[in-house]
Image 1 (cartoon, rainbow, N blue to C red):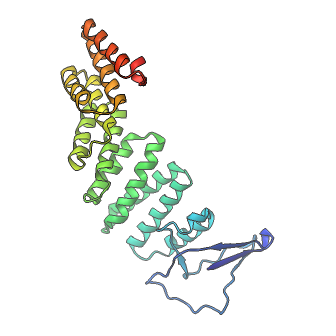
Image 2: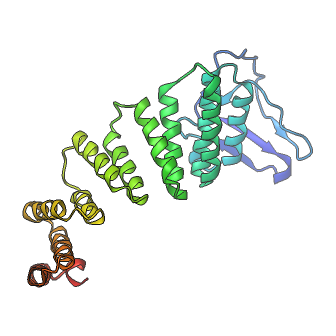
Image 3: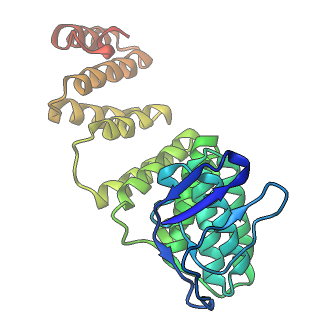
Length: 277
């Protein structure tokens, strides 16, 4: 237990359960029998080399003690004596910013890491993969699709064996879809499928099929939607296929087939949203 007593807060005691990790490069000084550091409102806290608290397992942040977490991470950052420790501390600051929903700050720190890497020979793959993944999640929140794509491409470069690889490919695909680059969207969806043959999420296949409508590749869209209609057991998916096939036939002026598709949706899938669009 590390107990902090603040005289400015009616002597309120804050107990924080955390893994205590001592940096191997720091000299650990003997502790007195009882360690109760006091922080006064008129003085800056004294940075001590030990103990060092990390948030790699989010032990500290589970309690919402963000200010204390930031203080400890910055202590590690200021005392880092090698590139890997510095990058690790910066990544922890990114994670803290993400948890505080300060997404621009998280992205900004990733930019600082990238600038630092220009002159550094250190490339700790696991740490940099985590940093880029965090950056992508923040950029997705802020709608910066180019940063999402760039960060996740780097994540894949660092962690090509990641169990998240299929999810990451799909996330890149949807960033391209947001940019209306449907060719790249389909390419990354196909990459995702090559890593994950589980078709339980047929809505991804539906998005893939509809992307051909957006790029006016109607024949391929008809092929994909017809296959989805014939193989799916999800009534909402089948109703969606009916609706989008009717849309294509309407664009082509084939009104008899338009009517047949829309009527099929209403008759067979009356509970689906797509049957009444």
